[in-house]
Length: 358
Image 1 (tube, rainbow, N blue to C red):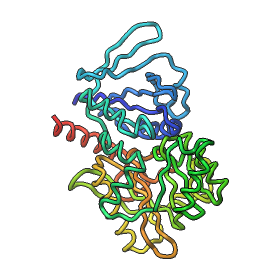
Image 2 (tube, rainbow, N blue to C red):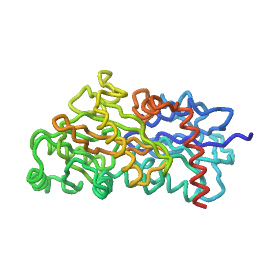
Image 3 (spheres, helix red, strand yellow):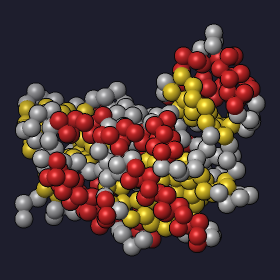
Image 4 (cartoon, rainbow, N blue to C red):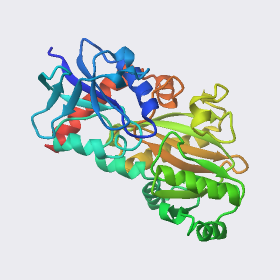
């Protein structure tokens, strides 16, 4: 059989650039060379698309000093244009794209729209699902529409955090929320820009920080709960949720540093949770995934409130991390699906969706 010509795209212009490279290196390691002819494309932090010849340099980011570029032609020719540093050009056909991009310009529907313009099948959620779930404001609206309980919140715009307006903004937030409260950029992942405010000064600083990451900010009630995650896979009737996992943060909450830099943080697969609560989380994970038009794979996160055992939806991630500490591949593995197997299945699903859209 002729090998599928696959473009694995990683890096990107978001604050999750480094994590994306690690995830892509993990996925690259399970792509069967007997099935796939892979072109590796790294997007630098300033938006340059580079050809990466060796998958072994993806994670350490040494590819960023490369000079050969690789750009997807946004028409229906299914072509990559490779420009070598010596000035020569190569046209390379592509059958399918596999974005392993976290955050803005990769997980928010933008690059998915490019693939759709080019009529190229691609792995993962479509442009609409990606855009909705990347924006926590709109995700909350979807969750409300299907009756899934979530943390109460106040919305803030970045211009409301300027020195001229921030005092009034703080008064408005304090009128609706009590300390402590979480301050989150609406469109950022890997817990980037998130703080927990215990007082007015921390709220001020948290709003300023969040505004550096996004124009929209959520100020949420603090839930005293265990952090529970669930992997969802498939589409339509074939959708299923795995068992659940628990995040045990080595800090007050699971921020970026606790997630990726603190070895005391733990990911626990199959934690000690009442069976009925596990089933409730699994059902709500699928409900949210379907309501957001999920396709392929996503990780859905919840809190299990300590005093009441109330299940509270937190967020959905449409391109979940695939680092050594990432929950999604752990949960899938425990459910009997190796990464190699489910990556192959996601690629086939992408062709099925593309055929249905023609």
